[in-house]
Length: 167
Image (cartoon, rainbow, N blue to C red; front, side, top):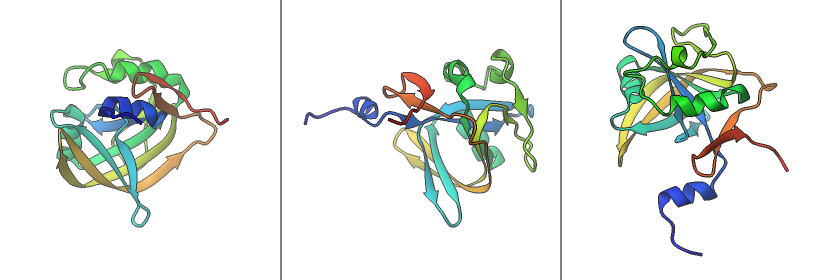
C-alpha cells in the first residue's frame, strides 16, 4: 500500500453517492448544488448529513431557512449536475440556466427536479464546523422515491457522473 492524499482516496471509494441539495434562495427560487459529502446519520429519528464549503451559498441558505431537500438526481441530469457544480447560486439561476424541469413537493416551498430518484425533505438540526467545511445535520421529515429511475453517482473521485451498474 502507498500513502495517498484525500483526492486520491476518493477515487478508490468510487462510485460515491451524488446528491443535488435543493435550497430556497432569497428571491424564493430554488438553488441546486451537487454534493457528494452526504451520509445517513440515524434511523430513529431519520437523519442525514451533508457538508458544504464554508463559503458555500447553499450552506448559507440552508442555515438561514432551516429547510432543505436532499435529492438523488436521475440519469437524465448527468450533464446538468456537472454544470450546476461549475457556478454559484448566489449569482446564477441554475434552474433557468440549465432548463431543468422542476416540480413541487407537498409540504415544502422548495422545488426539486422532476427527474429525481429520491428526495429527503429535511429540517436542519445542527451545523458543525469540520475543517474547511460545515456539516449540516438534518432530521428527515419525509422520504419520497421513484425506484424506476436510475440515480447518479460520482466516479473517479468527482470527475465523472453516471449511474451505477451491478456486476
